[in-house]
Length: 273
Picture 1 (cartoon, one colour):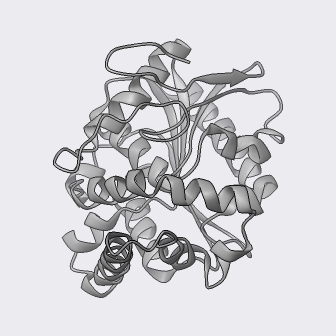
Picture 2 (spheres, rainbow, N blue to C red):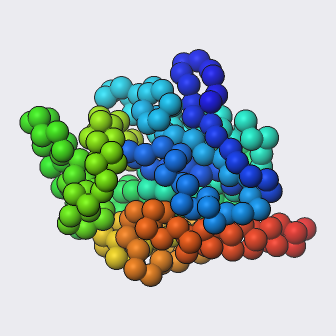
């Protein structure tokens, strides 16, 4: 745990080797990375939780949802590691990781983004159908929560994982998602307000890997495809048979991709003048 004003930040590390900082998505904590970490032998794995999840104190309000609050959390975690690090983010954690890379205030060796809700790049390039799909989902979900539907977040989970995904989760996982719905709604506001353009993405010069699932929602796949297109040193890969929640359902293929990306990033750095 990192103790600082204005609030606590989750911090856990395990293992030895190159440092990989693993940023979870919404409705989860650093524990979400355990299935992946089980395959990351020979690495120092550092995990945290985003604002409003786990032990990380919320700093946002409905009127103040700028992604800078999330970015500062991850920058603090990276500074605690002693850096430089390989930064990996899943879902909303992937968008926050991208925000960290764009600002460039902490030393990164590589970046991995797994299905970030990069909604603004869809809007920016005129992909109105996919952008509208995200907007329709989040508005309906927010409205349902506002009407008092406790399990409104199931709409968002099923959007990403397919019909019945939420119902199939263990009860404790469903309970935590319901408990943290308010934080997730702030996450969506942060995502919609995070400006992304081809020019800004072109400024990310570190080796980057963008991952999405073969069976993921087409709008999520397209947003991430665009990220990989506009970042000059980005590769992309699809995990066969996986959807959005790949770090839980396909941890071995996911960890293999991280290992390969880290190794390639090291070779690229060694070859650089």
